[in-house]
Image 1 (tube, helix red, strand yellow):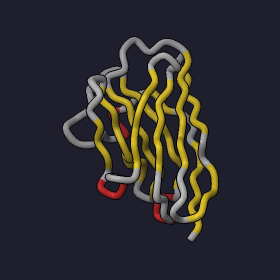
Image 2: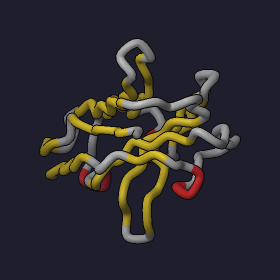
Image 3: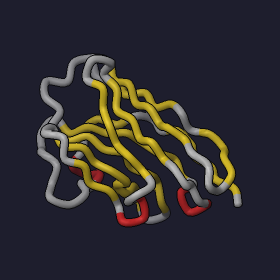
Image 4: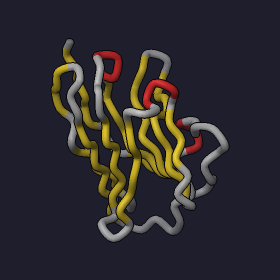
Length: 125
């Protein structure tokens, strides 16, 4: 059984930084697309994605501030977040798709079949 566990969330002031980590255990036959999502009123929106081949995509508000990376040896996915602002406050989830490659734009939440439980990020002004 696959499990994803996020960590690294917390409370920071505007302008601060956080690094989210997602460690997975269990067997994932092939990870086609990996991503970080956050919960917003309309649902879960993709913040960043990382394809099997290493292509990175970011939502417009995250470009230049966030960086997604992975460490295959540690079975981990990361999201480095800099210059945080209150609009970044949300519950952040990591997710993988074992079935579909990353699309040319950011993946929809429905594309992903493995999810963590989330880690809260709160940015105060």
